[in-house]
Image 1 (cartoon, rainbow, N blue to C red):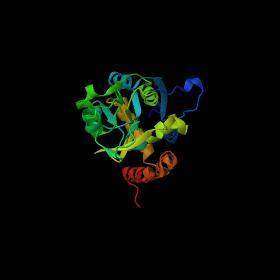
Image 2: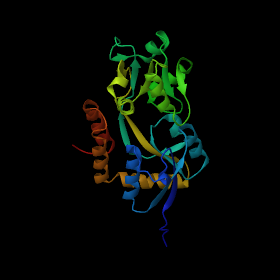
Image 3: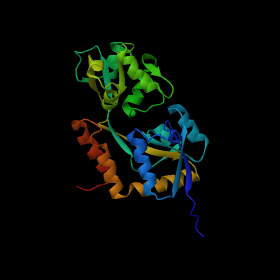
Image 4: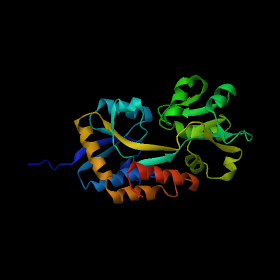
Amino acid sequence: MADTRPLKIQIASDYNPSLGEEPRDLATMLLLNVQRELQGRVSLEFIPASRLREWRELETYPNICLYNKVKTAEREAIALFVEYPLMAFPANRLILRGHPNLPKKLSLKDIVVSKGLRVGVTKGRSYGKEVDDFIATYRNNLIVGEGANSAYRLREMLIQGKLDGIIEYTSVFIEHHKQQAQRDGVTYHQIESADLTIFGYIACANSEQGRKAVSLFELALENSALQQMIIDAHKGLFFKQEMVFIEQGLRDAYNIQP
């Protein structure tokens, strides 16, 4: 007789449903939609964890999954990634304050090493392969924030004049600093060699439970109606010119034919 009990998976996250709050970020809302698509076949329990600790949890416990994670060779060595992405993002921008005459497209090496500007990054976050490689090489030239709220603190430090720049998504920065006056003197720059689109995936422990979870998540994400819902959910989240790449990137990732 087949086991009809739901597969119990713990999700390491900063979202705590026990507080009775609705999730505010799109990634969490989409993950819950994936769970609903599976109609009781998987049960998700959210547990609190920082960006660094969540990967340690995944390596330690067989029933841990993470979500909205960028694929890297280092991460693929320890985790099983779902084939289809949950989220897509425009490339991170180099966001500067007080340097108005710099070109729209910049080299991180020129800004950080040659010019010596104070640029903040978050420890344990993946910004895409090219930027991650730069951070690994020039870590001592950067301001590295640690802890669960480090990205938030870096966005605050930029406005306070404690940093010259941060690497962040434009939309995230603008959502944080909604008032135009807060953003006076701020400029947004494309980073040389960075990808146009970055995907966020569900990743699970390399275990029997992890393999079962990945199979179920892939089954859900193969549903064309859910794929279209995910694409539509991204609309309005990013600038119009960036959304063109987001939508096409997701359509390609889901193998949706024109």
